[in-house]
Amino acid sequence: MRKGKTIIGKDVLSLADGVRIHSVKDLIIGEGNDSVVALLVDEGGLFSGSTVVPIEAVRSFGKDAVVIEDAGAVVAASSYPRVHAIIDRKESLLGKKIVTTEGQELGKVGDMYFNETDGQIVGLEISGGTIGDITKGASYLPIEDVQRSGPDVVFVHPQVSDKLESQVGGLQGALSGAKDKAGSLASDAKDKAGQATEDARSGVASKDPEQSLVGRKSGMDVTDENGSVVVANGQRITADHVAAAKETGNLKVLTQAATMGQASEVGDQTGAALGQLGDSAGSMWDKFTSKISEMTDANGQRMDQQQTKSQLDRIGDAIGRPVSKVILDREDSVILNLGDIITHQSVQRAHDNGMLDSLLSNVYKGDVSFEKHEMKAKVEGDSTVEKATGGAAVVQELEQKVQTAEEEKKAQDEQKKQESEAAKQQREQEREERARERDQAAMEREKEIEAARSEGEDASVQQDQPVPAGGTIKSA
Image (tube, rainbow, N blue to C red; front, side):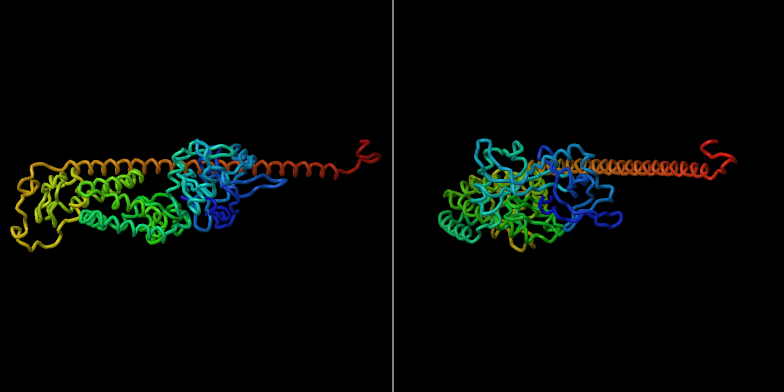
């Protein structure tokens, strides 16, 4: 996606001949304030009208320039009545008040983020007002939270106020104070929770550091080498964002952004995950998994698909290996004892008791060099290889999720491909039509010139005729 203000002022270049045609003066936003429909490249004057580049005619948005196919992509705004009317109204999205449907003013639209492939607006940047005072900067508002937009006001749902207040820090995240507070809370919680807390902490620490970014809020805009916004300030980081940052070498920047955005939440998360734990391991685990579940739900379907694949890989790698610690269920019954082989049934038992992460984090992957009878407790595990009688429904569910997600993604990719091809064909047809119109106009001008030339030659011949004797051309 792109940030609106970053496009203004960029050169517009023709791919056909490498010529700079114009520069972007403004972005034309549709009547519903939901999409960018064109780029204004010439505001016109007393004797000329405005010219624009329709969004579908843009080949690419680069870090330093906007590339179009050729000069034919620049058209008169008057040929697009809807665009022309918007220009004449001189209405601007930026600066509009953002107000909840209950009448609470949150700030003003400072900028907007749009999808560079189709122009759809995906989010707004809120600055000033109540939220600006709280966040010391700007906050990201997903377009889904907008209920209605008019000439003067953008209305949002009432709960948006609470969501935005959690984005404390904005562009100036107060990291150090929150870190000190988090450290104090964590220390108190550790004393109260005892060994159960240590077990939970070891489970958290074992997570992939990259995956730990998922679900956190970005404290600044993160862009790639082309200037495209990967994650907006205040936006929740998804697994796709992490993958994109890793691919473009921006993982360190994304981590910094996550640290800024999450700094103010560390104290609250520590209190929920550590400070408010009960005395028992069961109570601790309930609260911990509940917190993780909340973060997962907030990240949407894409993150869930990525985690599903990762979880399937972990399960597949664990089955058939020995476990390196005793795995207990909620009633302290032994699921697997130290050294027992992990089976599908034990995976299902662990999943049903909320202990799957603990099981998968304690898989022994080295060479087994101990005697089993020397370390095994007296209580036999009831999901061992010898006693296993069933499979793991959770594995089938995960596999079905992955298959469904892959089919949906394949269908979406195919649809996007078809839409892109249709748009390309439409642009080709429009270019051909404009070329035919230009050729027709040129032919008509040639005919007019030829006709004028012929009339001039006829007049010249009449003037050169000899005058009859005894009169003039006029009397004859």
